Image 1 (cartoon, rainbow, N blue to C red):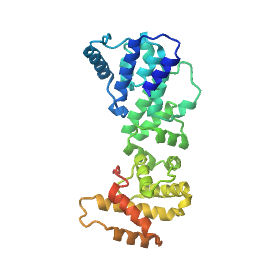
Image 2 (cartoon, one colour):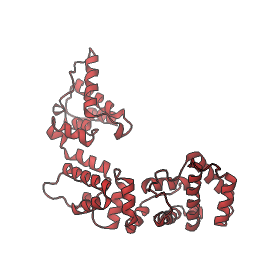
Image 3 (tube, one colour):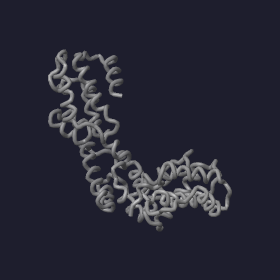
Image 4 (cartoon, rainbow, N blue to C red):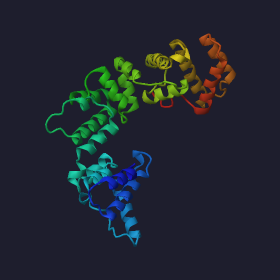
Length: 317
């Protein structure tokens, strides 16, 4: 945490740092750390305002407003700025140009949004900048979210992602900001990429309904039973069995169970279906479909859907 980092730095740093700067660093870090996720973080302006208000409300505090980070040791200044998102970091660059354009900060921002890109492992040309790379990745993402084909063409033409199925799959798997529907439309015509994308999933020691939910969180399912949905379930079934050989389940059995769970999810969650499938009916139907008597397993599957909900909640046409 930032608090532990600052304490360690204060203990080991040979630089003499004023006490009021130490206090301000903690105030800045605490404001940023109050948020549980990047989407909930306060903006740069809100943080500055809060720190200033705290300083004005404390008669014993000799701090006036927000300190000049340029006067701090670089380690502390960068530690504070590392909590900013790209927009706020650009705003901070208006005041602390050299600090806010630090390559380490922009590299960290790139990794946080695009966990993998082919360009990360390529030799860097003279004048390479992670700040410029962030802007390129951001532009490509915006384009992809409007039109997946054009977006991927941009990533490839700018040498951000290699035009190789495994590289594209790694990029999609590790990127947080891509539109689920556009990703699905892209994968429907890129089955080699889909193959590699499924291989990147890990379902080891996961209960089947939970594994299916995680699968559909990363790969959106269509609302209709079409060839793409069947391909998704076939690939998922093979991968699930490979990750859990100790269960003794065949891929065909997992495939049937997956379809059964999807139909049960629709049945229990749809307001248009008045007569919901009972647990007894589900067990009987599954037993007849897979030709294997394991009522305890089928009962657990029913309970999971009944208590936790749809296995593909983000499905969309």
